[in-house]
Image 1 (cartoon, rainbow, N blue to C red):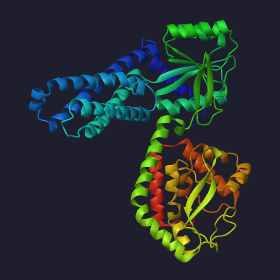
Image 2: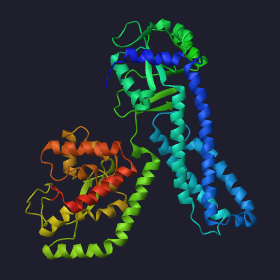
Image 3: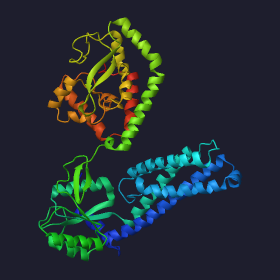
Image 4: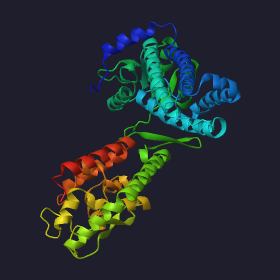
Length: 486
């Protein structure tokens, strides 16, 4: 990553922008509004065609028109009205000109999922309850694919017309500008560049557009800036407000960038407290209510399937084999550290002979306490099977950081700075650290540090598909066998 702004590159792109007779941001804003109207119209067209197409494939058109015309007209009225009403709240078109396409496709998917859920309720319960047909699922997926292609095509066409996004900065040193360049590159890629910087002192490799008091003069004379990013200056409050009004009249975004903007590695979240903007660390995905509901719903569904269809035949077999080999209970219940550092009773199949060190000493390779059948249970992860009951009780999740003994939590929290972050989510039956090979005894601190590193990565990058990946790798490792499983 080059931390300096190339003068030659900027001059070429600046000339391209200056060829336009319309100021940059005004040109982009106008094109954006046109493209937004176009993509909404095309989405509605595709939506109606998908509904009509799949419906007429299963219901004769003559029957629809003769017997259900009123319901049909009402249905398509609701289809269009509901889409236009819900779209602003689901973020599908909120920043159409915006940044990462995959984020827009994600918004499109979740918004459409909610929309189709409501439409299905209306369709089956109120309008066409007599028809036992299921065309809404293929309609949904066809619409998602076609709409995503439309969004991509129009965004590509829009960028080719408007050219790159240009911005200038007021103040800032090399550190600030380098970080800002990385942010814009990750957001816009090649579609954004810095025209230059206003400051009293020049920086090597950065075009100087003038001193602080020359900002207003430059903006009046040039129309090549879409955004003016303000770090700091020696201008008075009134002078800065004049620049803000000038930017507003020339359709230029004026944005204040916090000087210490890289405090938070994973980005910031802005909250409004009356008139005061508050910058805080960006929340992890599982802090969002919709993600919590999705993860918990999956946990309950998956655990119920295991409990109802696997437990009745597998649990008695395992219990009998445990009892035949050694005396003691079938289950081993131990206090472990759970969500928000709250202890809970973690349930496992007993894999050791009853001993007094089970709450203090981890199992090691060749541990004499482990029974022969216990070794098999540990290698196949079947000893963790009863923890699906913990999931149903709400103490655990299918995927998450593995829970540790209370004593280990107390010890390692003093040795590893980020250790307690693991408890921001519910512990899991399996986890990213485990499927990545960081399981087993942690007699050396670096091993626990690597486990914590993987757990924190999981928390900060959670997605439903990440959970699915962990589950798949867990099953794969059960079949393949793991070196550190003993």
